[in-house]
Length: 313
Image 1: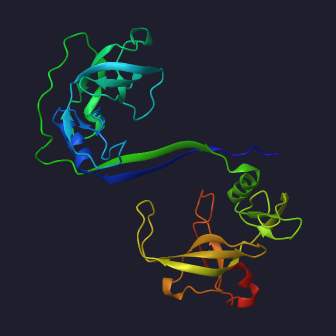
Image 2: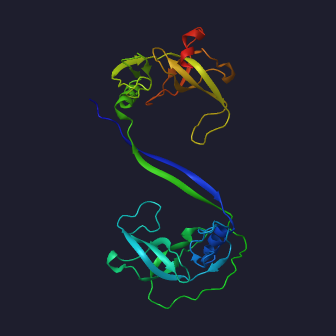
Image 3: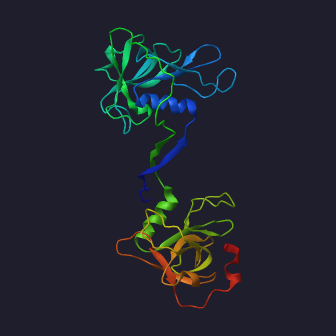
């Protein structure tokens, strides 16, 4: 049995959100080296602040400045920092209750080792050199054995307040296509397309899934299909994708390869976009070194009769 493929995969996109008045004041304050909390209905000062009271659920806007020094309430040592974390060297994740606050703020503590970190230790804010109005304006916390910092009176009003933030959402993981699709991908390397036949309904799935989604039984019998096929349905793409060097408009279609019981996706080329039609007979076009067809082009055959592909729409 051939080795099952696996490869690292990254899903990443920017996440944009607007800010309410409390979060806007909090992040703008960080830009100006001011830490603001918010007073709840029970008198507690919450840092980081929230927009709605955790007890009554009512909107709260009573901003309260707090100190730049505080106390570690709990911690965990990070031996191997990951990409995007606050520090590149080992550090402690800490919950810090800033002086004047009743709740703790999660951030990084720059310490030489876990032996010097303990609950109850005193720390202070280390500001980032360049601040933009984000939680990263606090570069980290650092150990501190001096006096309690003086709290600067502030109403929470700033010029050019931060009204929104953009955060990169990213997921790194290892993907394996499994036995069936590994065989499919390996066959594409030889410019062949293979599917698997269900032993019950006899439908040939391309790409194969390892099991029939209709009958629920495992599939193992490999069947070579194509290379020619029929356009079943299609759409005209008019918006250019940033990562595709293809001029718009172009056509993306469902193509039922000869012998397959399921249509797959493919781009149609070699014909004006407004001449693509259901029933058009097409064949794959490969580029040198590619592991899958670059696009499909017309074969010149007569169009397929509708009844031959209607079950694959």
